[in-house]
Length: 245
View 1 (tube, rainbow, N blue to C red):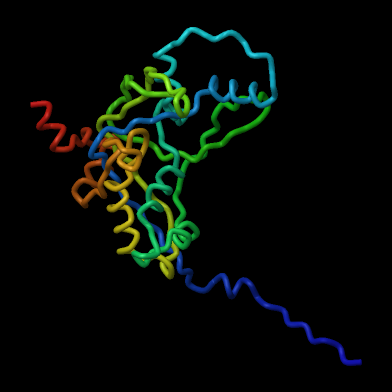
View 2: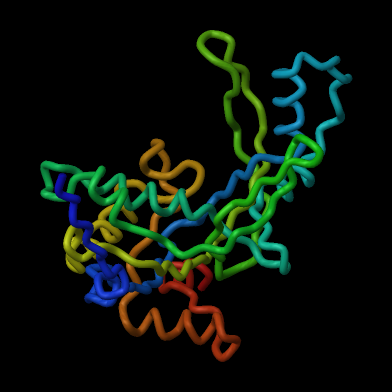
């Protein structure tokens, strides 16, 4: 009986071949204010209590300032961020097979860098790490909105208090599979989604006008990079500067 010949393959040689992944780094700059709405520890705890059928405690007094603070994604160093998956989903929203860039293809071919920030969970002892992109710009302000909560005919009017970043920008970096997404295609997706979808609450995708952004040009990118490094002033977009005059 002849023995099957086995062949040993060198993975080191395979891995040493040029990869199709390329790095990218861009700045996206807000055209309209960004509204954030993180899940508060209180809201998550109430959800858990309902799911485990715990005894429901009495309703607490509303604290608008606490609602505002809890709507922010804290980075742990005094700064604030935005979910990386929110940014990626925004980019994905502009992809479509009819445009020659299938959403499913972009999903697996695009990776965003992010800081893993540990948030407070509802269940003691559990962990919840959230990938965030840092927000650069003006300090968040407490924004008041009239909203409707509930479903169907049971919706009731309510006031929502959330964080608003009027002047904002994010440095978005990562890698992409250049054999699937070309550089021009990636730039198109970022430009397109900034207006068609937007980020945060009341964005264009959700019948609002907030969270719109554009891809920074070289001059803008240098200005925001200097601000990030503490070597330059806050880059105020021209339309905000004109409104203040």
